[in-house]
Image (cartoon, rainbow, N blue to C red; front, side):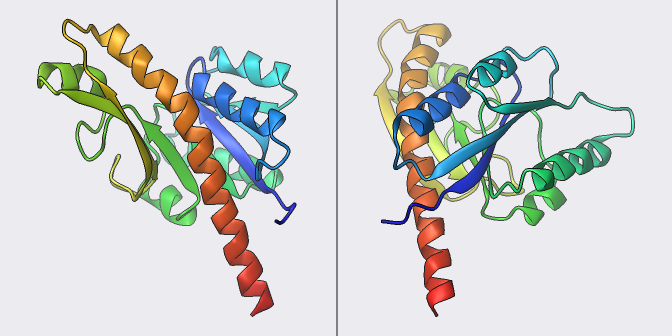
Length: 203
């Protein structure tokens, strides 16, 4: 098994609980194939920045600017390049990335969404599931494409919807699965990426 690691960045907007799960797995598992070198937030006050700093990971906070999304993404791109990032993981990142940015990182941006995609894309997926009377809910790890929450699925985990569930109760049940599923899928995807690179070099 290769000892190589992909250099990863995590993008957050808030507390970053999925970020923390990823960092924890990378720290505790010597075979985890991603070295998370950077955490970026689009909100200066994001609590997850403190968590990342405590974990010894470099952080950056890029607040919204009047010049618009293209300028913000250019600044993000510069920081990612400075850190030689290979893989981006979105973890509660609430900003939509442009089609141009996604195209530049094709196949190298992953996201986790709190529904069983293609059901309930977008915001408030848990509330959508409850409003729809769904018998089960869950989470999906997928590759990010220009169309929101529509990229190839890497993994899913299902949870039952209990009678009388509130949005908070269902969200908590799903979040526990997110913390398990996301590191698992990120690791598998990174291993496959590394293996493909090795085969290309060997060829």
